[in-house]
Length: 175
Image (tube, rainbow, N blue to C red; front, side):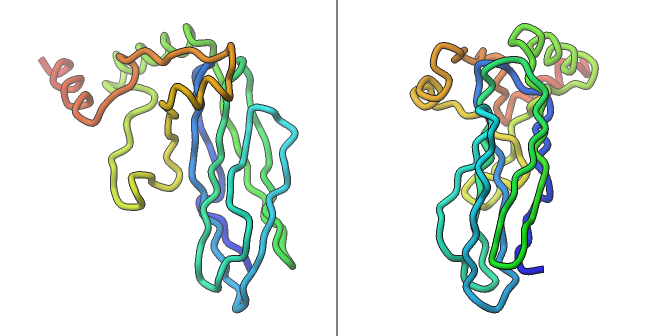
């Protein structure tokens, strides 16, 4: 193996239409030479892979951002290909995009049954606040508007949990 991809797949789970979600993936060079790689473009207009092209020094890693723009309800199953000089690494990207109302109902149901929301806020540890494999909701309104256009729907503030909200929700359930 010359290139390692961690995590080996992007499983976004249930997503809400009118929003954008991201997940980070590391591509590590296991070769003894500087290795260049390229990412094969995807045909699906809702899935984007963002990266900075260039070489990776031996033992170093470069980050890929897998971004899903939830334009309409869909089930996404894509395969991202990372090509190096002598190897092709493929990893799956899966997601289920629900209508906003359906997602909100699922979120409320998960909160009542499990005591937590579908998309809990990730605890911020190292790596500049972004853990590998953690699904992140993009909250930049201007960016969302530019990518989604008319499909952009503001995420209800009550559905965006903060780190302290989990404790409040649990304490309410325990009463």
